Length: 88
Image (cartoon, rainbow, N blue to C red; front, side):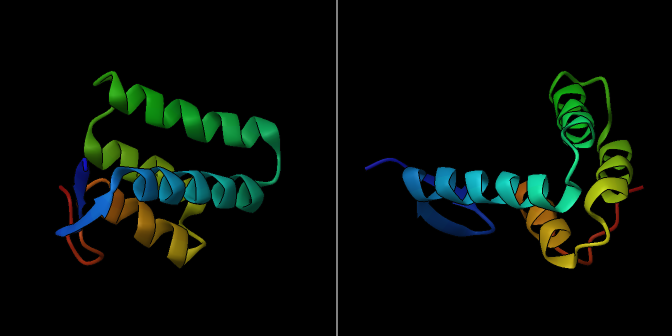
């Protein structure tokens, strides 16, 4: 079966999609307002289009979910950073 590597562990692709979906649902609940959630998604979109660089993305995302350590930790791992790794 297909596998994807995340945080050095192999996950079934379906499980990874479930984790992603759960993360975005938690972010949506954490942010509350649909307009704020849309701005969060816009940051991710700009990063995927290489408009934003990683340090900028982390700063912006931190403004949205930085108050929730679990969400921020999951996001950092998702983009390939460990919790202590600093980006300059």
